[in-house]
Image (cartoon, rainbow, N blue to C red; front, side):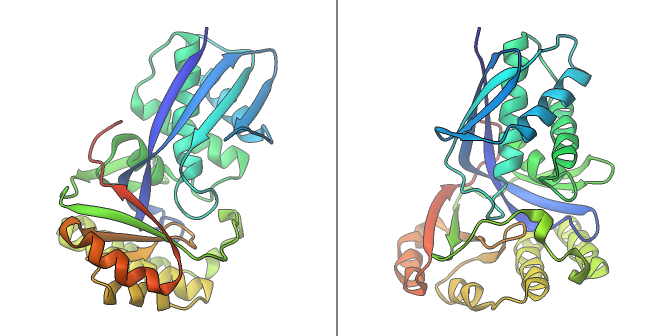
Length: 282
């Protein structure tokens, strides 16, 4: 028997690292996982062997909540989400792998169980500072999610208008780096919480503002220029901000203006990935 799982991707609105409260929204990039029970755990990512510690942590958390256990698994992941760029690749992989484990074991787990198991496994494996519950929830459910990552609770969900398109901008010279390398102490926790509260209270207009305010906060902590953000706004973006711990920039553009935006923004010299807004599960 072979188990299958899939998860969408997401982009940041408010980074949860500083205050424990985060928000993100779903996009159409995706991660697929296949799991076959074995005596040990192995992991392949996009056709290449990878260290198995994250898959091992996910399996341990799966076995702790599932009525049917797996002794081990050969896990293969295929993803179009760039890794270690702030684009939720680990959260999407956790959702997909846990869903594949459940399928292989012949059980159905509630979505909330998958999210909590994945967040705890991310903490166990050290691939996330907070467990990234906000990212995982946006990847799984789509739409905008506001979460308390410490309690692992979804506080509010809203939809993103589908007349918007998500654009991901990656500096051509970006180097993948783990979120654990992020200078957490340089983030203003009180300001991050204010950004979160304003966004949750104001809904979609607050989302646009929060992306920009959060991006400025993270840029200051990283000590990086906001030139790419300013280029996106000058090219006609509705909103833009650093996603996760960067360096990727998440951008929202009115779909009817997409071609014009890309023509102008590509002059900044970054790599652009266009994705659809996703308000539901894949």
